[in-house]
Length: 313
Image (cartoon, rainbow, N blue to C red; front, side, top):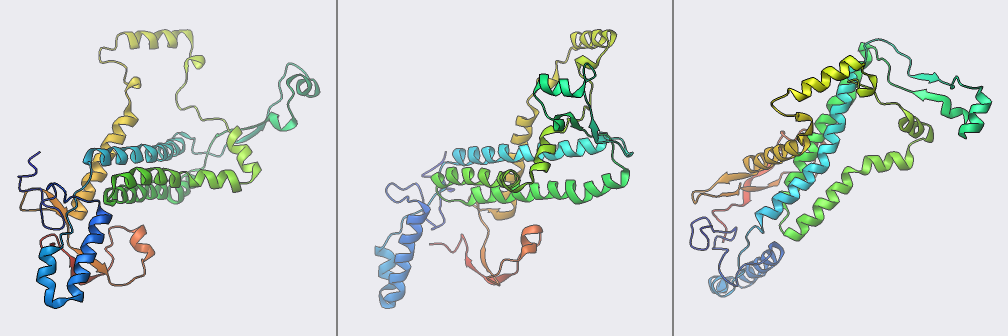
């Protein structure tokens, strides 16, 4: 709001990015800056004159609001995976910790099997029912350690990397394209399962009956249903079932990861705004896998910074 006269309107080139006719996209600004520096290196005796005569312009972040909207859209897409993983954790918690029968053969009792198949147009396989009935405690622990916790961890890495990628994308049109690409990447696991999963496994996943955590109205007696209606009628605080918790969680996680990005990759400048930390080249051109799996482990970098905000321009 204070630009162009405010103290916090300085771009990475060290000049005011709100000057008319001097603001370019990041790609154009980087190319113009490269040409200026190349001319200065090619004619070192005219370096000062080249820097005075050749103006590369300036770059400023395009539309913070649109960028945050794109980050929010990306967070909505990853929230579905977090919700599914939380559902898996809930299933493991509510399942009885004892062996149970997950497979049963159920033929309607109102007629013989042959007549039922002819009247309903079904096959023998349709009489096979899959359900979640029980899981020994040891298998619950194995599922928690090998499946649930890694899924939560991978979700955190994916969300953090995606937000960082969107925040560091220079052009706003590229941000919009990249959020679509990231959403596509998140659906790769389902695409791989659909294309390469065995038909038997897909059939079981399609036919498995959901676990009932809380009994519905059809499972309640008349007295239980009446008590439930009276409780809802006397509820002075409103029905929280209608509250959009997933929307709230999407907003909260968006704020958390955006704040984490500024905390890890930016510093507060003396002009009042946030600028990039000093940029260092990696010590090795090979990106270690552990640096991705353990993002808090900083990759070894060269001591000398190749770009700093104070030295820009």
